[in-house]
Amino acid sequence: MRRPSHYVLLCALVFVALLPFAGPWTSNTGPAARERQQATSVRRPSRPPASAPGMLVRGRVLDALGFFVAGAEIMRRGAGERVRSDADGFFELTPARGPLDLAVSGEGFRPVQRRLFPASGDPLYVTLEPSAPWDQPAVELPLLPAGSEGEGFVVDKDGGPVAHALVTVGETGACARTDEIGRYRLPLAPTVTLVVNQPEGGDGNGVCARSEPLQFAASTGLVPLPELVVQRGATIRGTVRRKGGEGMAGVPLLLSGGGLVRCVESGQNGMFRIAGLLQGDYELAALPWRGALGGRQQVALQQGAADCELQVGEASQRRLRVVTAAGAPVPNAYVTTSVDGLRRAVDRADGNGWVEVQSGTAEATTFEVRTADDWKQLKLQRPPVADDRLVVALP
Image (tube, helix red, strand yellow):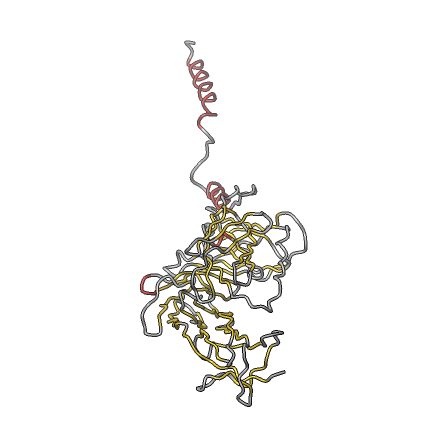
């Protein structure tokens, strides 16, 4: 061990022994290192994403005038779970990743079915219309069949992941959220147009994207989807006001257009803001809320932001008389009142044809009249005018 070569050999052995603990020895400079870094930055994991925890499903049941429905039954079809709404119309289901097929019913109301994708995270409102004697039993919608799923990534223009973005299938409403590396997975259909909505980023207007329509053959298994690159989005903002100009907080608003459906609630002083939208045409509608009806606006969204004022009116009590063209009263007729296409009330006229109805604006309100005994629909000769008459033609 006195020769210098022995010391060199001993140092070499020690160095080799320590290599496994030191990790890979690579250079941080030069073309080869830059190529390795670029390859690493665009590499996508092939393993399936870890199962995301289910989202707690909360919702509220309202009647067609926007008042809370207590005791409504909410059934999770295919799972057997049943709950009832409380005094404020609230209900809660066990956590789920979706989709959920819900059947909602209540005494005196027509049952409805809703397909829900909890990943949206939007407020859930279920509006029940009043029932009528001539309503047919509800036909159960088919449960969503098991099929193929697609997996893809959402990235920014530099290739970085876009986390927590909502990806929606425009044709079916199926949606999912991206994880921390921008990955998402959702059920497919024969034709799929993917829409990305992320209100965060984009200089305050969020980011968005839309794919071309994609065609898929019927199959099972995991299908790779094209990478979606986001662009700067646009924003719809405004205020929900009563007819007198006062802002209304807490009003549920439904925005639809371009394959996207989002639900938000107006905030303080009735203000609202929906960012991360693609340019195009949208419809913004206020759901009925505590007697406030109407409020529907078409929005042509261009770059930047579009401002809109959504005005809602209070449901008003109105006294009408159902008569024939000759002026004779039609006793005990049923009168159905609808506002903006939603059935708001089913009332019964008295022996002299008089009936109390709750209506909205004249432009948005329509009536249907049926006979007392066999519920045959009577043709309206003209809408009610200043004399508050519903003129019908008897069969």
